[in-house]
Length: 210
Length: 210
DNA sequence: TTGAAAGTTGACACTTTGGTCAGCTTTTGA
DNA sequence: TCAAAAGCTGACCAAAGTGTCAACTTTCAA
Image (cartoon, rainbow over all chains, first blue to last red; front, side, top):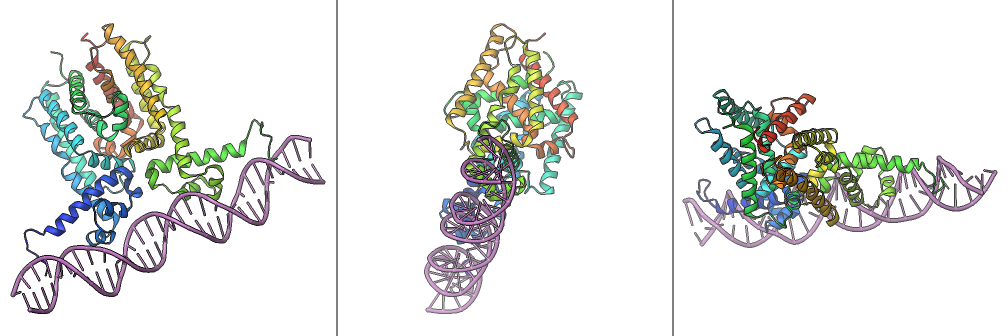
């Protein structure tokens, strides 16, 4: 056989799947599920189309594999919202981490946005349940801060939406952000300025007057 | 002839174009440009496909017609950001109007979001220039307020992005909003609560301590 | 009433698409 | 060395896609 099933490397398979996924992320992000042709994914990953079908049995399988990967690495920025921290520091870190992540993973971010705008057709019940649970957990932290008088009584769920939306915008809607900021492309400084403005404004908006 | 060229009604033509546009908005919003098939638009508008081609010469022409319509009715909510008003009232009205508009025109809103996420391929230079000019005009108003000491010195462009992003989110990313708010569908009350939370938080974030 | 413009449409041509397959080459454990 | 598993791929297909067209019906000003 080409290699034992227990072969720890699995190099060819791994490499090709990685190439397909990588190309898929870019193209699904730009074209959405229905607009993406696997011939294009094949070309972008440097593999013949039939070879793509050797690893994935359908377009949907490529797509859902990507979505699953995505969700797994999704909650990372939220780790900063933890009860041991002070709210000011927690939100500052969260905003920075979220902007950083979307900036460095623009295609993933857009792919996810695209999937949601198109009706979240491929998000499973389990995926959505996961989103709910993660939100709940962090809502509880914020409610704790409010109860402790460390924060004004702001609705935590709407607050999360404001944070999510504001940070997401720069990557997902980059062309509009570029026009609104009157620049030609978003530079690191623009993201820093965004983080600063969002953090300052929101923090003044939710912290007790000091 | 069917009717004089000067006929003030033009009913058939008008009606059919309206039907096609209406169906197009829904379907382009759900599927994006590449994912939309004109056969589906035809079916949704109750016309045979060939009849759709009688009014529009291509898929692209339908799409760009819709985008043009959209942009025309876009700046409406921004009218509240005007120098005669006090910032608090202006932002409150803007947030309410924007949430209202996106709620009542979800498909348009999503179609536009979809177009941007997919790289703004069909926004003309003129369209984008328009976005810049509208932003500039309102940035100037905010700078006036800041100079007059009516507002803290917040970067107006990033502030607009926060407002745009936060209000847009509820319609464009409705499935996620539903999960985050732990509900089954967004009701009028949810939009009211959203408007209140956004307005309170942002206003506390940008107004001088009183 | 009439004739020409406007509107309608089934059927068609041509292209692209997702997906299959038979047979090829490469890899590797024994 | 060698056989079998893994990997590869050109060629193909049925279905679906965009766009066209010739012939039909409807409308209405004169």
